[in-house]
Length: 388
Ligand SMILES: Cc1ncc(COP(=O)(O)O)c(C=O)c1O
Image (cartoon, rainbow, N blue to C red):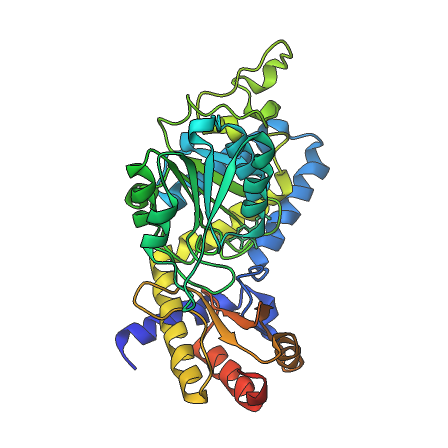
C-alpha cells in the first residue's frame, strides 16, 4: 500500500461513523442521494428547535440563506453575488431560460444527449417561445467528442447546456472546452454539475462557464429542495428572468407591487421564501465536504474507483463508463443483462446501488472504503450471470 492509499483509506474510515447507514449497509448510491449524516439530522433538529423557541425567525432564516449562498460560492470559486439560491436545478434553469430573448436570429438551445431530463424538457418547453433545440449525440463508445459540439453550435446558438458528469454513464465531459466553443460563437454555456459538486473540484473561472448549477441531494450530502445557480458577473444586467418572485427583488422587504425591479446581482434568479429547513441541512452537508476538502475527496474516490475498475476487469464485466484519463469521476456504470434484478440481488446483501438504461450504477464517495469495494466486487462475482 502506498502513502496515498493510506490517506485515502483514512478519509473514508474517519468519516464513516457519522453516517449511521454504514452500520448495516454498504451505500454506493450517492449519485442518487447522499447518505444521511448525524450532522444533517442535527441541523434539522436545530431548525425545529429554533422555530419552537422563537416562532418566526425571519432574520435568522434570511441570514442562513445568505450563508448558503456564500457556501455555494466557495464551492465553485465564485463571488456570492454570482450565486442564486434555488430549490432545484429545474427552478434555476427555468429562470435562466426565461431570461433568454430567443430572437429569431439567436433562438437555438444546444443540449447534450446526456442532459438530465429536466434540462432537456425545459429546453424543449422554450419551443413554445420560438426556440429551436439541437441535440448533441454521443458516440457508441459513450463519449461526446468536442467536434460534435462544434458541429452543433453556431451563430444562432443562444445557450449550450452540457453536463459535467453524466448521470447515465458516469462520463466526465471537458466542460472548459465546450464553454470555449460556445463563446467562439457568442453563445452562453451552462454546466449542469449535479453529479460532480462535492466529488470533483469545480472552479467557474477555470472552466470559463457562464452558468453552472447543482444541488445538495447527492455528493453535497444533504437533502432535497436546495440547489444553486452560478451566473457570471457581467451577465446579470442583460439577463432579466420573467420567472421570478419576491426574494429576487432588489429590496425584498419593501413589499412593493408597483413594478418589476430585480436584484442587481444573481439573486435576481432566486424566487420565493427560501427553503429554510433544506438550507439548514445543506449547510451541514456542505460543511462535511468542506472539512475534508473537495480535492482530498476526489483523490479518495479516485483510489476506490480504480480498485473497482480493476476488480471489474478481473470479473470480465463490461464497464460502460469511458475510462480515459479525466473521463470518469465518482460514478461507474456496469453493463447488466437485467439491471433491476442485479440491484435487487445486491440489496439482499445490503449493498445499495442503482440502475439506469442497461447498466448498474455504482457511485463512491468520501465515506466509502476499500472494504466496500471488495464487498461489492464479491457480490457481483456471485451474481456474475447478471453482468453483461
Ligand atoms: C445531472 C442532474 N441534474 C439535475 C438533477 C435534478 O434536478 P432537480 O434539482 O431539478 O430535481 C439531477 C438529479 O438526479 C441530476 O443528476
